[in-house]
Image 1 (tube, rainbow, N blue to C red):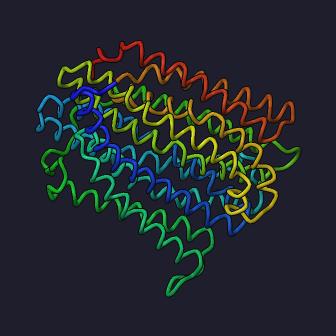
Image 2 (image 1 turned 120 degrees about the vertical axis):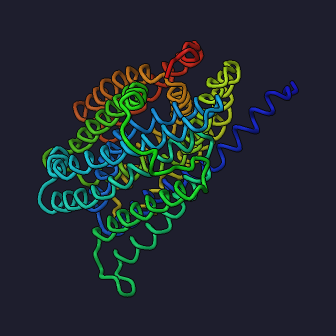
Image 3 (image 1 turned 90 degrees about the vertical axis):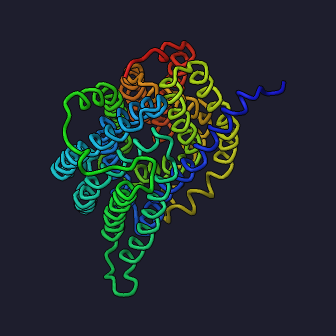
Length: 452
């Protein structure tokens, strides 16, 4: 059946937004992948430390979402309605809040580094490495808050290129500095795992500085002025009313994932099992190659939905999400096959310890089987949040992440001694259940009437 010109136009607009976002997602993946690859050359303790830090940093990103998700939805509505001055003002007020949420996350992560490691049953050298890494990495969160919230606002205005430019620069800095500090290249001292986190911190500082330059120089869609910064109680309430439930959903998700990590750390009898922990982290890191396009299409569709709702075009808003999902299903199916076949090769090249691959390969093949539901879940969740419907994803996170993932994962992995394979049964069940609930919510269509 031939597409109508209107559908063609929507497809074109979607891909114009998707391509820079996909490149941005690949760069984000590149930072984490490179750090994991470097740690795999050092040992299980280093990989475990970086794995824990990745989850803790994710908590920071979720807290930033209180401001970022709200800013994205509100800026998109104003931009779609042609109220560009108000879109810029909301962005400036959001960035004012970024300094406070960044400081809060910095303090939390510095103080909770040791308790986080203890919850994973890390002790001795493993505990020391993890705590030092987490406390150093906390410095990057203050700058990441500014960059992340600015990127959310820019995407609401349809500017996907500026966040891409900033992340490209951040990625290059991270690779160069982390490599030089880890191995001791040139004038840099050999710092081991501390060199990896040094690269992360310096890269985030540089990325935030570049983002500020682009915003204030007028080289992005949102040209800001210092006079627009400050607190506005009405704007803050609007931002938190939309972003608050999204952040709570994220916190429920992170809490579920962190509790799931505690399940992973208890898969062996006795002390902390670094091999299972490292195998888990390598697996979830590589899995990102499957769902990165879904995140890109979800972010792009969310921007189109917010702008369409602002312009009063409800039909275009509904079609954007459905079109985005259709683009992702085929790729997710292909990655199912790739992951299943190449699992042994992936673990052989990602970690030098054979025990990590022995544990990880069967579980990774299981995980490959639910990539299509995962893609559907990601795209439709982004779409709902872009429309300002952030409460339903919160309820889904509470049910899926906290109850299904952790409960079933513990039952199959620890109680029935199924190991990492058993634990990942819970992870798969969570993704499948939430994908069904979120898809139902999207197709029900009530979100088109959400007020922001």
